[in-house]
Length: 317
Ligand SMILES: Nc1ncnc2c1ncn2[C@@H]1O[C@H](COP(=O)(O)OP(=O)(O)OP(=O)(O)O)[C@@H](O)[C@H]1O
Image (cartoon, rainbow, N blue to C red):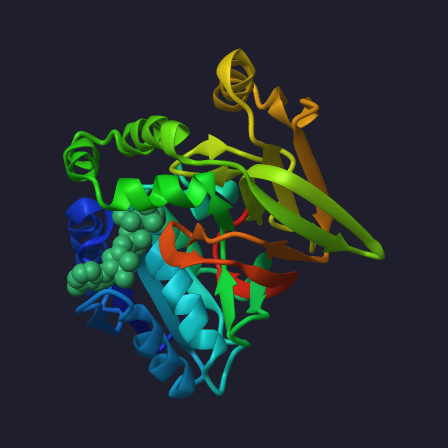
């Protein structure tokens, strides 16, 4: 085992609709039995992961590790907290215990159980470098960081309805979180209209009169396992952008069948896809936004996106 004096744990007991408690119990028992020094910092309210991570990063000592136990939203907050701290390079360890867990799915570590992940992390001598992304809001001058994706329009409305749906809790209890997402998706099909956006990348600009799905993504998945961008890779130092034009009727059904089955939607003429180190999206109507499954509210988004790298204690093979 590499030298570890203490593990500072950021734990969201609400993640995975409460299922993270069983993950935490396993981790806690293991650490106690192995006589590894740890301290748990439970998130007490929505958004709490940011100040906790900031404070931990600012007081980090050599041979101390920060471990996040929660879903993608908790990891997102931990990353944002570390990035605004005096020690933004502080690596993060992560054990997924949310409902979607798209980051761990994108990294292909989702199938490993919490104890397997923990034991592998404990013997790592050095953290690994993984792509995350920076989003500079050009309207507010605020910067945010994300591990999975930022979406506006269709996808974000789906997140909004999923988060506000009572069915989410029931379906999560039944371990059918993806179904909760898909059922909100069907609702949004009737409500979401197309909206105009411009995308600037390199020296080019691409205009869309009627964009429907707009997702800047670090790896393939959103919504608890839907591969919106099978080509996205979290190690290529690029961020992907997928724009789907407003479509209706059978065109919509065919495209969504491709999206939910074999991923061939990227080749469809209604779908536009780029992989770039950075790009800017200007959205010209008020739309819902989502970041790593967390609501960004309704705005006209004007965001500069950039692929950046962060270090993680994650056993990538
Ligand atoms: N004590 C708390 N009370 C209420 N909400 C909390 C508390 N602690 C954290 N949260 C909020 O819980 C939300 C969900 O967390 P998280 O995204 O980690 O889990 P999840 O939604 O189950 O997982 P995933 O994003 O992978 O689907 C976050 O928005 C976070 O701010």
